[in-house]
Image 1 (tube, one colour):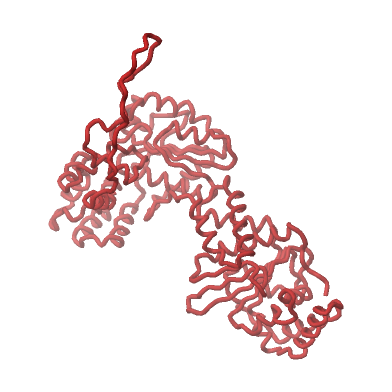
Image 2 (image 1 turned 45 degrees about the vertical axis):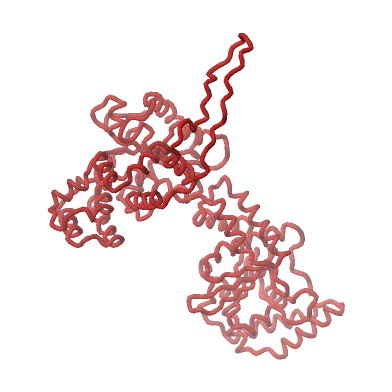
Length: 555
C-alpha cells in the first residue's frame, strides 16, 4: 500500500495546530480527556461525557496533503493500523465501538462522492443526521478491495494484507452502514484556516490580543508536542497556561444596552477616538467599557486607566497589533484632579494625533469638570481637536424600565418598591440617573415600605456626603479612610498593603532621612538613620474583611 503521509516538520506543525483547535473547542466539555498520538491510536483522541451521561469518543486523523480527497483515499485512512501491528485498524475500532466518531481532517478538497460525509457548516461534535445506505457501505468495501494489491512484501505488510482480506470477506454491510454516520470528513483545511479558528477561540474565550497571538500559539503547541511524549492529558496544561495569559474582559456584567452603542462604535471606528460625557451617575464608564469590550473581542489589546499621560504612552508604544485605551475621568470626578490645565492641554494636543487606525481611545469625563476647565456653559459648546463630546444624559425610551426589571429579577426587590418605581418609569419618569437607580437597588432595605415615589427618588439621589455619612454610621469609616489614602481611581491595593495602613500605629515608620542634600564642605559625618522596623502583622482582621465585602456589595 502506498503511503499517504505528508512527510517532514510541516506535516507535524499542521497536525499540532489541528489538535490545538480541537482542544480549544472541547476544553469546556464535562470530564474531557485529550491525548496526542495515543499508543495504538491516531493523531489525537479525546473523550467527554455528553448531556445524556454517555461517554463520547473521538479519534482524529490529520492529512496535510492537498491532493483531492477521494473514496479510495478515505478507505486507505480507515485501514490505518497501529504501529508495527497488523490488526485493530481504525475501521475496526469504529465498527466495534458505537460511541466512537472518526474524524478525518484533510487539506485536500473532497470529491462529490464524499459530500454526505462533510458536516453542514461548523461541526458540532455530533454524528451525521442524514442517513447512509447499504450502497454507501458496499462502495467502501469495493475501495478496500482495490487496495489489496498495494501492500508491500515485508512480513508486517503481508500480515496486514491478510487481515484486510479478512475484513473484506466478513464485511457486514448493515453494520457498516450504521457506522458511517460516525465518519466525519473535514476537508479543505489549511494552516491559515486552522489558525483563524484558533484566533477566534483565543479572542472569545481568553481575550488574547492580536499582538500576542503567535506567542500563545507557539507556547500552546509546545504543550502539544510534550504530550506526545508523556502520553498525558493535554487539556489541563493548555487551559492553565491560557488562563495565566488571558486578559480580563472589560464587558460589564448585566449591562443593558442604551440603544445607541452601534452608532458610538461606528464613530470610534471611523474617527479612532470617542468622547463620552454627561451628568453624574448616568453610566458613562459602563458604556465606555461595553464599547471597548467589543473591540477587545476583535483582538485589540485594551487598557483602562484614569491617567491621560499613561493612556497616550500606551497608544504611542511602537509595537504591532491594535490597541485601545479607556480613560475614566482624567480631569477628576467629584472635583478637579491635580494639574487639570496640564491634563486638558495633553488631551487637546494629542487627541488629533492618535497614531493610526490601529490605535483608538475612549475618554469618559463628567460634564461638570469639562464645563469648569473649559469655561463654557454648555457641553455642546466644548470641542477638543474639532471633536464634540457625546452627551449620554438622555436615555432612550424604556432603557431605565428594562434596567429596573432586570434588577428585580436579579435581586428580588421589595414588591411595593419595585411596583412604585416601575409605574413611575412607565409613566414617563426619564430624568432619574442610572446610578441613582443602582444606589436604590443596593440600599433598598433602608427605605420604608410606605415611601412614595418622591421620597424614593430623593433617597436614590443622595449626595456623596450623605453616602459618606451613611457608610460611617454602618462602621466603614476606618476602611474608607484607608482606601482613600492608598487608592486612586483605577489603582487598587493588595490586602497586605491595606492591612499595614489600617493597623500600623507606631510613629516614625517611614523611611525618612534628615539628610536633604550634600555639599563639598567639611568632613562632618551625617547622622546615621536606621531603617524602620516595620510590623510583620499583615493579615487583615475579620472586621475589615467584612467591611470590604459589604462595600463591594454596594459598588
